[in-house]
Length: 378
Image 1 (tube, rainbow, N blue to C red):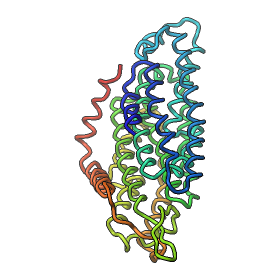
Image 2 (tube, rainbow, N blue to C red):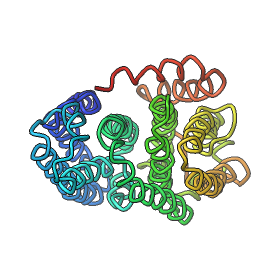
Image 3 (cartoon, helix red, strand yellow):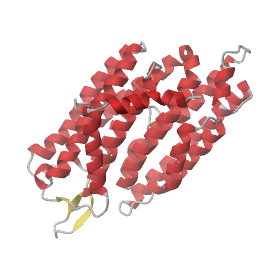
């Protein structure tokens, strides 16, 4: 986990395409191993790890090939120097377009954007739940940081050539994440498709390229990360109980969460906060994140994408509130028990719930701080 965390720290800060690639591998390789470490459902866990590894290798190859093309165009491996070389017309526009697009494909894979999302539901479901929370939040933050840096520095100069394709990617990501999530019967798979839908929402902020849009994107990612870690932490505490009364592994089936509010009001209440944030309900961090990102989308001429995002947000709210209804308005399932936290799970849930509410009520200081992030761009 420390190796992966080190890669996450370097990934968005890299100004060299080689450093970007090495950081990607340092971040990803430990995650492939961690995904396969589930003690229960080992076959599912190992299958998820294999899928993640194979698809991750393809994504790395795309990024590396794109980096090679950009080096051939500019003669430099530094992202800032590639950006400086772009305005020059040397008759190799196809080379730089292909290079930028291939690098973007590698980055889009890591954020789980469609059609590069196929790994997300299986990996989120098969990995141990603490690893899923770490991956869902940490990789999202690091990948969007790197994507934001690369897009605003390099790709935005080719906006007229790329915006149509990337807008379709954002649209497809929102639609796939939203409508595939509606039919899910497993909490972790539902949250996986939710993460895909949120990636589409955040892409609107990335593509808008407005003043302060980088801060808006990072605020949204922060809000999403807090709610995600908290939601998966709650999921680790919800266990199944057999006929003899022995407590087994986690239960992800939605119907098993019935009546959770009566069995454990604190766990269900925290999960309610996270689901409200995912849905973008006011006084939560998720609402502020969506508001600032969608505002940047309107300002950047992507109003049609924002309209689609608002419709998708309304649909995703349906499956969030379906879980809320099960937890608070149905009879408890006797096969389900909420175990007591033996480590720092309760602390994680509490901190994430508090952070989600505080950022929703007092977002200005954090937004002001994140809006200064543009000084870190090359």
